[in-house]
Amino acid sequence: MHPQRLRSPRLAALAAHVPNDAQIADIGADHALLPCHLAALGRITQAVAVDIRPQALALARRNAQRWAVADRVAVRDGDGLSALSPGDADTIVVAGMGGPRIAEILERGPTVLARVRRLVLGPQSAAWQLRSWLRSAGWGLRAEQLVQEGDHHYLVLVAEPGQPNEAYLNVRAGGVDLSDDMLMMLGPRLVARQDPRLAAYWRPTLTRWADTLDALGAAPRSSNVARREAFVAARLYRVQRALETIGAALDQPAEASPWGAV
Ligand SMILES: C[S@@+](CC[C@H](N)C(=O)[O-])C[C@H]1O[C@@H](n2cnc3c(N)ncnc32)[C@H](O)[C@@H]1O
Image (cartoon, rainbow, N blue to C red; front, side, top):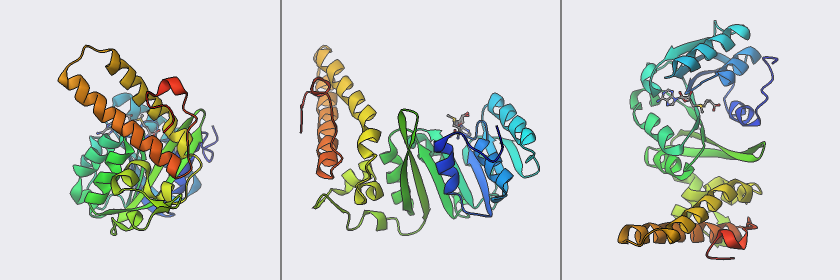
């Protein structure tokens, strides 16, 4: 592969949010294609690619050599931000993990984060938990982007220190205000611009929740099952209704949802 081209639209979208001349750390870098690409382009001054898996570290080192950027991409064995010292990076990328895991990695590195001016994040599940963490930790959500790669839609979140509530204020979509927790769930900036990719992004999750409901419906009855069923049903119903409200209605197959069209 030519070093200046990233074949993955998801990685390219993440890379586009890294500021010029940044010092980056890519946590959970795996192949380290993102820092290698940015270093090869001369877009960043230096990078640290961190991973906890030996195979990933070997691959990252191979890619850094192959792309002739090993002088600018340091590969480090480590767990999350503990592999960094404060000042090692002004921009941190964490992508390709679930939202809760990314939040946990950030939560465990307050002294490193104190010197960071941008986070570029790619949560692959439960993004609302990461948005919630960012807001409570004082990070403002500056951008949200949905990007298609193959059949999947991926989310990119960009956060900077300060003004954590700003993205959630005065968001009107489809002529209505959505509740704060629904904005957290769907993404305040995606909602504010009624992002046309929202429906496709949500479809697999809603199908999964509907399947969970089907499975719970077939399970032996107990108070636990009933509680879980009520929780999943309410969440499915509320998200479907919110998406319709903002004009991102889904063509959900009727049999996939016990609620039918909402
Ligand atoms: C699915 S890969 C994502 C690779 C790349 N960031 C991307 O988005 O394409 C996730 C990587 O994160 C690494 N990882 C998971 N938890 C980690 C942690 N606490 N510290 C460092 N690396 C971690 C895994 O070993 C794995 O290589």
